[in-house]
Image (cartoon, rainbow, N blue to C red; front, top):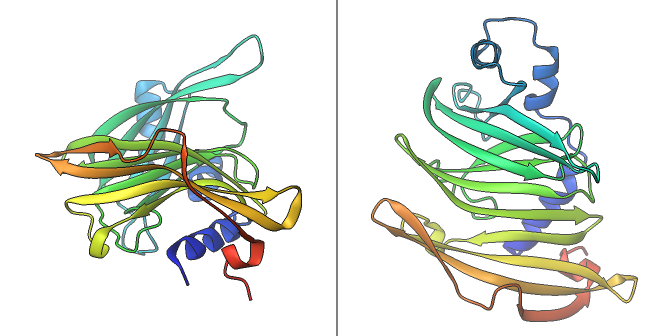
Length: 244
């Protein structure tokens, strides 16, 4: 099975996943001894969510990100903009912080986090992918790829994604020889129905990018024309998702 097929099946399953810890637990927290409660009280954030980075590891409870809501505004068109400060912790020790601004905030949106490059086979823990959005198909998701080495934090790449019933647009990562220590690649993949035919679609590749490590910073280089498709192909829905 091709990597993009495995990744997309994961996306379809994830549309029905239960709420992550960042929402369900923070809503029920009553103890003032939790990291998010004490920090929110001290800094007077509007609220703080905990984003675990467990990657399925039971002993990774000390690795998490605190998402501290700094500001929330509504414009004349009722579009909500939120500003967060993300505090990264390893073994319960704060390592670094970063700020993000998100336009078009949806109520009850949720955070998620994982190590490594989402669609690559390797899980380099220096990379942390943060996602934010309403947990349902058809809603836009905000994605951030960070690189954390000791206390040096870098936002390597930022993108949006959306999937709905097997269709949508997202970013796929690739690593040469399953290694991402010196270089890796990504491209945007879109799969849309062809002439309102749910059995036939068109896959499009665009925005091919290579990331190379220069010194202690990652630098990106666009390999194709920005926002322009460099590959298109019509194919049946089942073939794209490798459904037999």
